[in-house]
Amino acid sequence: MTMTAKPHPLRRAARAFGWTLVVVLAWCAAVMGRIVYVGSRDYAEKADVIIVLGAAVRRGEPSPAFAGRIRHSIDLWKKGLAPQLIFTGGLGHDGLIPEAEVGRRAAEHAGVQSGDIFTETVSTKTWENFTEAARLMKEHHLQRAIIVSDPYHLLRASIMAEDAGIAAVTSPTPHTAFQTWRTKIPFLLNELRLCHSHWIYRAMGRR
Image 1 (cartoon, helix red, strand yellow):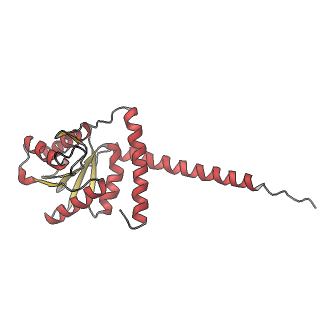
Image 2: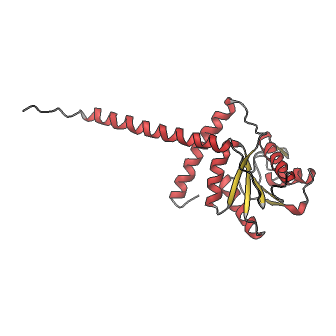
Image 3: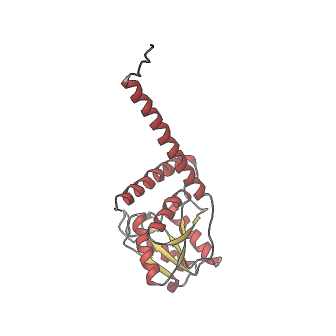
C-alpha cells in the first residue's frame, strides 16, 4: 500500500498565505473599483438640501479642492436641484476661520440668500460632517440631500451618510483638484484605507 506524503507544514502555510493574499488583493481591487465607479457618476436629483463636505482652508481662502466643491454646489443650487445648502467643517490647521464659514461666504457672494445656507463649524472629519449635517437636517425638517465632494471621496461619504441616517445621493465635483494620476492614486489608496477604517469602527460600535 502506497502512502501519500503530507505537504510540509511550511509549504501548507505558504499556500494558505498565498490564497489569503489573493483574496485580500481581489477584495481591495473590488473596493477601489467601486470607489472609482461611484465617483464617476452624477446621481444628483431633486432634493431638499445640498451637503458640501469641508476641505482645507488656507489664510481664510478655500483650497483648490474645497473651492471645487463650493463651486459645484452652487451650480447645483442654480439649476434648482435643491433650495438650500449645508456647509460642513470646523477650524482647519491655520485656525483662522471654519471651513463651513468660508463656504457660506462664497455662496452668499454667488447670490444664495443667507437664510438658505446652514453651517456647522465643529466637525473635523467626515463622520462628524455627517452627524452634524444630520442634526441640521432634522432641525430644519429636511428629508433628502445631495452630497457634494471630490469623486473618490463619495463612496465613503455615501456609506457614512447612510450610517448617520441621511437619505442622500452623490454628485462629484467636475472641478476637482485631483486631475493627474500622481494626485489621484494617493487619494484612491487613502480612501481605500479610510473605508475599511470606517467599517471596522462601525463593527466595533465606535466611530
